Every structure is written in C-alpha cells, then in structure tokens.
Length: 458
Image (cartoon, rainbow, N blue to C red; front, top):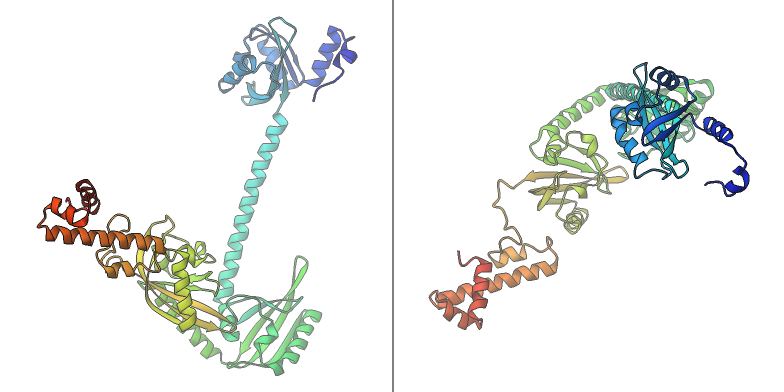
C-alpha cells in the first residue's frame, strides 16, 4: 500500500532530501540510463568494496551480475519496469561468493533514467543455510533414535523371560514381548489390564504388589498363579519417562521350560509359514492386515512388510467390494471358505487369478481371519476376457454372477444368444449368408456387421 497524500507531504522535498531518503531506505541504489550505471549508493561493505575497486559507474548493469541473473535484469528494465515486483539478482564479490540482492525498479521522471533499489539478502541466505543444517542435524538425530528404538525392540522381543510394561495411571499393558504375550494370552489389539490376565483371586495381591512398586520404586511378589501356566514370581520396577510413570514387570519361574518349548514350536511354525509357496495373510475382524508372509509380498510387489501391515485387505484382494463381501459373508457364517476364485491386485494395479481358502480363528474376545492365497493363473485355463471375447456357453455366463453387475451379465447373455442364432442360421443355410440373413430377418448389411463383430468373417 502506497502513500495517499504524497503530493501534500513530499512536494517540498528537494533533490538532496530525496537522495537521502533513497540511501536510507535501500541497501543498494543505482541510477541507470539505458541500462548503464550512472550513479551508485551502497550501504553494506562487501558490495561497497567491489564497487569501489571496479568503479560501477559507466558500466552496463548486466555486466555487474552473475550470468544466471542477466535475464532477470533484462526483464526488470524491459517489460517489468515499474511493475513493483522484486527480483533476486546475484553480484560476484572479491571473496568468491555471490551476494544475493532483491531489486525493484522505479522510473525517474519522463526521461530515460531508471532507479534500481536493492535489499541485500545475505542474512536471509544465512538463515536458509542454518535451516538446512538444522534440518540435517534433526534427520541424523532421528536416524539415531530410530536405530536405538530398533535395537531396543530386538532385545525386548528376543528375551525368553516374559516382560511387560504397564502405564502407572491405569495399570494397562502398553508393551509385552512375545514370551509375555504367549504366557498371558494377550489379545492381538488393545491394551489389557494387567490384573485381568490372572485368576480373580489374584487381583488383590497383584494390586498391592503394583502399589508397593509405585511407592518404593521396586517390589517383588513371590507367587502368583497364571491361567493354565502354573505359579510364577513377579518383580516390578518403576521408571519415569518425560512426565509419565511406567512399571516394568518381569515374570520368572512357572513352567518356563514348556513356555520355551512352545516358543520354539511357534518359531518353527512361523518359519514354515514364511517359506510356504502360498501367500498367507492374517487380518483383524475389520480386515486390517496383521501379518503376511514373503509370498504375499512377492505377489503384490512389495519389499517391506510394514507397508502391508495395517492396510485394508480389500485394497489387494477381490475384483470388487461385492466379491470380497461375498467371501467374508460365507466366512462369518460357516467359519471356513475353500477354493474361492478371485483376483489379487499388486501395487501397480495389475491383477492375477487366485484361489482363496480362509478360516475364522477366535483369539480371546476377538476373531482374526487367516487367508491362504494360491496363484491359479498358470494352472487353470484363463477365462475369456470380457469385452474382448464373448462367453462360449451358458455355464460361462452364469459363472459371471457375483463378478459383474447384472446389466453387464445381461449384455453378455444377449451377445451369446445372438451368436448362437447366427451360427445355427449359417448351418441351416449351408453358409449362404444371404439365406442366413433372410432366416434371421436381418438385412445383408446387418448380418455382415454382426458377423464381423462376432468374428465369423475370420
């Protein structure tokens, strides 16, 4: 926004006062005539030294900037003269570094004189460099934290001793290693209350045990029975993280040998599932993916399992949501589905024919679903591509139910009937097309069009 009363307030200014205003308001001011510097006012040392040594007066402005800035000078003094826009130009300096300056141009009077007013951007460039360095430092710090978290997670999961971390506010389990999940039969999702994992008669002693740990920082419980796992001893330690307090509980004793044996058996099973030639997917009740094996990742062309876990299975499986709903409806009603024909889509949108067998497996208060997916595109004959080749029989038309909307199935059925009728008419007429057209009640041109459409002319 400019001055509204410029004529009223600045009419009494003489040339010297105007020059002082320009010098005070701009870091660098140039008076140009036909692109040549006639006078200079400089306010910062690096450009001042350069101008003093090179004597900018009498030189073309384009020769005083870096090569990549020359097009901007032409725009500023040409079509952009007096448009009020700021353009960043760079001046070479004796130190070897380019000095960024923001320029705008103002025409002086009615003659050829132009004033270029500049603001040095050295401080902005310094701030930008500091911002880049700070961002790089944050990235490095984030990488260090991520690696530390990965090492902690690997160590936590590798412990054969059951360990859980509780939130002191509500005594819910926030983290548990695989041994603890197996021992306490923890659900796949959600945070269970620690005392709920034990028989009801153990709730009171466990509550007192956790209160002692919060009060003194550490507590032991000599004996507590775990459901179907015998007697175990507990040791709890309190620790503070930021503004919250947590408890880490270690469980010792009981039938640890059996627990390790179960853990080893589970590892063997996991290894077999990981190397199966069929894709295996486990999902929660809302079809969010919980785990997959390597074959599934190869099918959808993903490298990292973390990109699939947490995603909706419907993004990968099924031609449409209707087909997936049909699969899930049967799975919920009967608990198992075998040899369900559908397609799997990879991350590029391409699909392959597959056969799905699925099972519903209750785990505590929730049901998870397991899917075994087998590629059948090489084993089975490919189905006709809809729109490119018509179905060959009524059976193929009825097989489309559940895969396509009704109106598309009706269109395919109509095409099948037309083709069968034309085939029968040609057979009756002994391949005489004129007679076949008369039998069908079509014109010759109409019959030829249909023959070409259905490929009879080949």
